Image 1 (cartoon, rainbow, N blue to C red):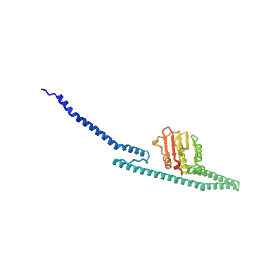
Image 2: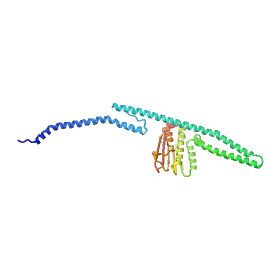
Image 3: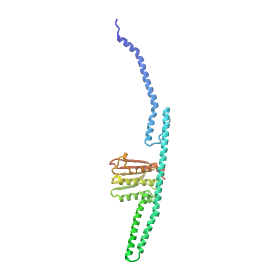
Image 4: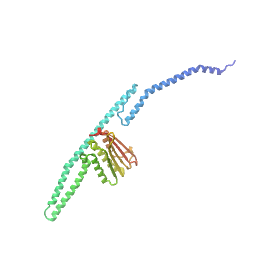
Length: 312
């Protein structure tokens, strides 16, 4: 008799096969249960990541629901508290920025009025006295000529000073903005800028009724356009600038400013462009500030201000 190892091996496999199949089935079932349970527990992580992305993009109103897993529920509670603090801080910053700009504009307005009322009238009085001296000069011809020349010199200096004072008053507070409204003030600003910069042409386009925006919106739009024209002169090397002001379909105010200049890299804005100040003015009015530019692509600025909440 001879022993057959193959039979022994086959018999062992036959005995072990049910056990192996049972182990395989249990393993598959256990892995499936682990996958389902852990996946269910970790599913809120996607919502947490999405909410964190919202915070990164400036959406401080993003909130997380209460999760069943205690650890994630604690994370959600801390996250929601952080969002509330950030949102409150942003609202405080907006309020402070708006108050700062309002105080600044009030001081500029008071200074412009003082220049107009005090210095302007004083210069006018000096001119009147100089004219009176010139007309009433008597005596020898030589002496009379010297007095007349001195009076003419006083008049010339007074005219120069008055021109300087008027320029200062326009920069501090445009008179037309208070007297005739935003559109007329912008027209004067653009016309004066075109006269001083023959190499660049600015085209102003306005639409709809824009005489009910409120002082806060009026002065902010005026200052933004003024700053953009100054930037174009100093940095853009452009040949044309477009300023478009209109209401959107939902009643908001939209200001678009474009130039065909050299532009700049968005992440490396040159200092002195005043972009931070413009953004602060817009955010103080709860508006939206969008800037698109690049080397050789000009600068495209889009500002949207909700009139219902932004008027003042």
